[in-house]
Each structure stands twice: as structure tokens, then as C-alpha cells.
Length: 367
Image (cartoon, rainbow, N blue to C red; front, top):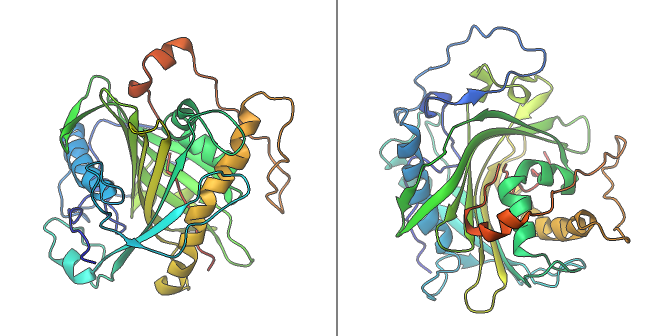
């Protein structure tokens, strides 16, 4: 099968961006116990100059949307991705989870104008993807469109921290004012956009392996006139140099990387919620990338089970599922996702999200 090459631009890559490439004008969140930073913020390690926020969004959405559409094209054509194994089935999900793979050769990445200077010897970039379709209703074994919006567009980081056992911390470090911005990309108009920098912290076992942190800039946007949104997470390779970094400066953590593109929409054919998430990741450390790649497909699929095991606890029903054990530290209370208001439901195609983590951020492969 010939694999597509629609996302070979310099923006959405596992290699990541430099903080010098971030759009200006963000509001930063000072980390706890911060001290004045003496490190150079604009270090020129990225070869693509920093764009304004609108140009940044145009670049990111134009690369991401055709790429994720290749998994299950809206046109009805065949997937351009390679099917990987049989569909996965889980106790908490009515829907089977289909797994795909797509590889970008390092030699192709070397040809991309504007790629950063972080890597002198680029390796192949392996993406894994999952796709599942869920009945659009708030019942056991599935979830409603409103629940997907609340969990993955509006409260992605907090939701992921709640239902993913390995996530032990999440913080928003930077945020851009995107009010009133609309972007034309891939034949559609995208609005209700949020752009944030998130730092996520993942537990890695067994010890003495160090825990990981994943700093990303994350974009979430809704497609006007439809029940559809996308979430794109891009690694920040040198976020430790930012005055707004906290986890990335923590010497007890390894700064790892993941890129992710997620599309969630209501299918016009039957009203089901289609949930697609593609990711490429590198947990760094001593484990070779090829060994990490063996673990990623299973971890990506497992996210569906984790979410559907957790979401009933947010519905206010009398019978709640057993809490997810995080083994080790005392269990924390899972934060609730607010119920949608009438106004939200009237404007659901334009609802907003905060990551990535997400998305969906799959647990990092053990190293």
C-alpha cells in the first residue's frame, strides 16, 4: 500500500518545535516556586521563524486535517494507513478499536524545508492510530457527543489525568487569546479555537526508571456547521528554557515527546460518534525506539477502555464503577466534568477545549 505524504510540513512532527517558534502574545503561568529565568528565551534552534497566531493555526490545521482524514476519508475512499492486527475489544466498550500504522521515512523528513535543527540524523517517524465508533448516548459501554466534547475539547488535560492511571500531573503553562479567530483550512472553516501549552507528567514503572514529562503546544478547533472537532498536540523540544516551564525543569523527570492528531465527529450516516487518534511518541531514555513502538499500539487502544470505564462516574448515577487504581501513591479523587448547559447544547459545534493530550496522550512506553 502506498502511504500518503500529506503531512510532511515542518509543524506537526514528533521532532517538535522550539519555543522560539511559538506565536507571540501568549499569557504564561508562572510555575510554583519559580525563580527568575536567566536563560535565553529565543535561542534560534528552530529554522522556521515564529509566526503570528493566525498563521500558526493555518499551518497546523492545514497539515493535520488531511493527515487524519486519511485514516477514514470523509469522501468514502479507502484508508491510506496500514491496518495493524485485528480490532481490539474491551469489557467497557461496545465498539471494537481498529489500529493503523503509518511511517514517514527519515530521508523524506530531511527534505522538508523549515524542519528544526534538533536532529542531525533523522530516524523514521512511526505513527500509530486508533479508530472506534460509539453509539451517541450516555449509557454503559458508550458515550454521548456532549461527553466527548466536555472530556476531550473543553477539559482534556483534567479528564486525561482522571482516567489515565499513569498520568500523575497536568498543568497549563501558556495560553493564547484566540477570540474571534476563524481559519480556512482543508476546505472548511474552523473556529472556537483554543491554543495552550500543557505539561503532562507520567509515572513510569518499574523503578528506578524516571518518570516522564511531555510538554506540548495544543490546538483544538471546531468545524463550523458540523458536530466535529480536532485536537493537535506538538512537542516542545526545549520548553525547559521557557520561564513558564515547571515539569520540564524538574531534574527528577525525563523530558519526552509525543505528537498527536485527534478527530472526533458525529457520523452523518448513522449519528454515531467516530473517535480517531493518531500519535507518534518517544519516551527518550535507554529503550530503543523500535522497542517502544512495540508497546504503543496496545497503549493507544487501551485509552478507549480507560475513558469508557471512567465516564459513567461523571454522570451522577447512583452506581459508580470501582475507582481506577494508580498503585503506589494514594488514589486521588477524579475531577468531575461539568454537565452541559442549555446554551452549550444549542451551540455544540462551536464548543471549546482546553490538553494532549490529546490527547489523547497514550501512556509512555516503559524504559
